[in-house]
Length: 366
Image 1: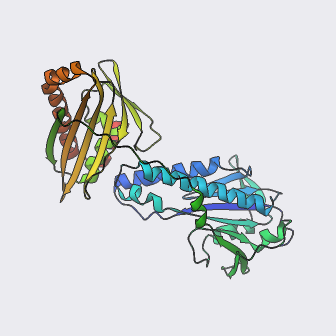
Image 2 (image 1 turned 180 degrees about the vertical axis):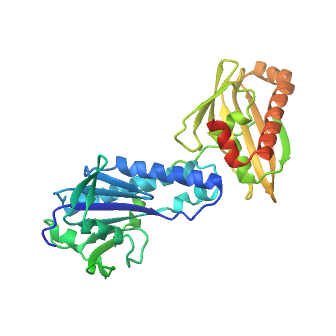
Image 3 (image 1 turned 45 degrees about the vertical axis):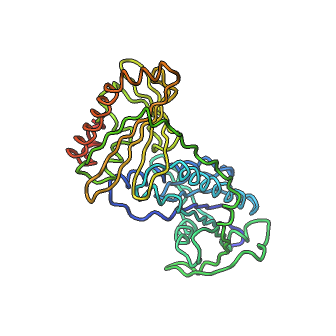
């Protein structure tokens, strides 16, 4: 259809396997929602969003088709924003669950088409309707031997002012049930990632071993469940009995540089998430605060190691006195600090062994 007059545009995410664990399901949903929001915010063509379809977005422009260079520029912006977010996520990631550890391998493809379609109103929502809408959805399954690409249908090429593409584009034709064979052109786009900026290394604190408290316990629960209980701020009040309130950004997964505030005795104690290198097979989560009197900072590391279906938990706390008074302060209050962290340790153990993951979330949602 050389006179097709409307654009259909679909970016589609792939790469997540089917997760079963409650934590992995929640984290994969969160990661996908962030990526979809980023692509929605990158809509320079002012396209209408018809639908969020699982891991894909369905856009359209009615009665107008931008030139091919503008569409390619839109693809490039969405693609780079998508992978830059994943790059940052991997750089600051602390969680080792299947969803988080495989997020950097997520892929993105774009399917674009042109055709006539009607707009129908379904309970106040405007939706495109017609054969071209069916075609673009069918084209998500095609014969392209790549996982990251942009696809232009022949109808789209003919409908734009620019006739034809350069030789870097390859052509294919695929047949679908109840549709005429669809001819399309494609180009792999993974090389665009070469334009992503390099990220600075995360600086790891060096602490004084003379001002240190260590506690260790074995918990009869798998490591992922214990790690989620410790790192998920939504669950923090289940075991942090010294805090009256926890304030944090509920829209993000905890990662390096995430902030949260514990309100203890009407005082705000501000924390930043940190990490440190750890031998293979161990999971580490750290928090740093500068709000402890006479201390320039206090680093608390939760180090977990799987032991079959159980978890070995080590809490390693480093105090960095800001002056001579701080060194005396630590010695005076060392037993009190140890008692506070011991209470947290045994509270983590009690909650982890008593409740399933679903039960934990139900407790904090009620």
